[in-house]
Length: 249
Length: 249
Image (cartoon, rainbow over all chains, first blue to last red; front, side):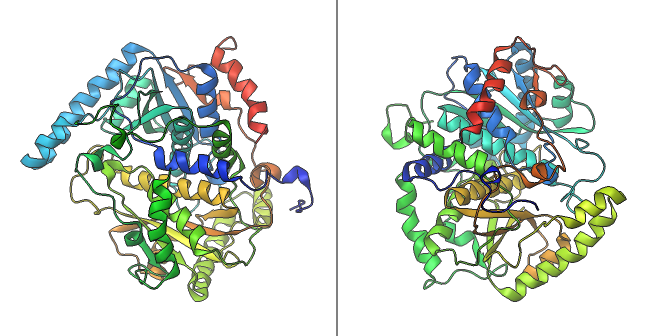
């Protein structure tokens, strides 16, 4: 490497102010999967540009940048995607036991037609030639890169007042057909994007009692799978304290 | 849904100040895949707690929260993972043509032993029972949720001055063996985490000339795969302008 720490050309911006940190955590904790609060207002090009630029600056394996973003405003296209959702959603409902099924059928799980913009994030497996740094042993890494782009877009959208909903109840092959996606490209995420009249404080599936938030300390192991945090562990104490910290956003 | 927009219990924090937005974009544009700048300093528990809490608040399909975080400080464990990296990396080098191979072999691609903390992010496919909302048609969604958690952690780490490097040149089965990960659980990411003496301004693979950044407008299509942005399109103009906006971070 020809770079060293004294070279300003190679070094990015320094530390974060308290308010800058607050902005990041506010986006992380206030981000929601939005299905039902979309307003019809157009998304200005400068705002759309910002969230797409944020997505494009996600990490990617071997700097492969395997993503594309299909920005969909065409009503007929949205309707075709919606039609496929309806079919898939009916199939999905049948997979639940009767009690959960009736609850499932009352949930609104997409905002395809209401959201002014839909964005399909795709992964081109051949973007950077046959061998890619970091993808030699875990070939799924290019899909993971595209998911990082989705999360960047989602957080930037939250900061701009835009809600994003990820619709995964679709038939992949039908979606590819509707959008003309070639065979060597995988649709990773179908996103509904638009300004919203409010954001829920907590995830909707938590609010309606479908599933609870796990205590964060329960998903942490030390050094090896299954080795739980001890009560006396300093990290355990901080995680409990952070519950209040997190609620401050 | 029993909620409405007048109910403060259901509504999250409002809009973002200019500085709060700046904090988010600074994290997004200043985040780097770090391999070589780790300092040995311990990560305080309160900081570790914040980045793990940020990760735990990622979106997850059906609110499944399929992730676990194995926090590794044990030197012997790190050494075993490093040994596997060395073997995988030698195999990887053989896959490149001679010119690229010699460049590949000069790249530093991990900081497993130097980083004070390693974190393995895993996905438990059975976390929420046999049928999960949103995972009925795209079963890969639980892995994608875990990647969103990785990206949250990565951005929070950047704001806290911590570098993160994602090591994907490993044999998955060997990693599972070393960490005692059960068969129904997939290791999604192996991360090296620690304070750094500086962050690169641009991705290292871009800086050393391995791969260039694609112009963002080239990865955007309108309504359908292959329909490029027109020069006259307002979005195209904003994307060009955003180049300067982005460089401000």
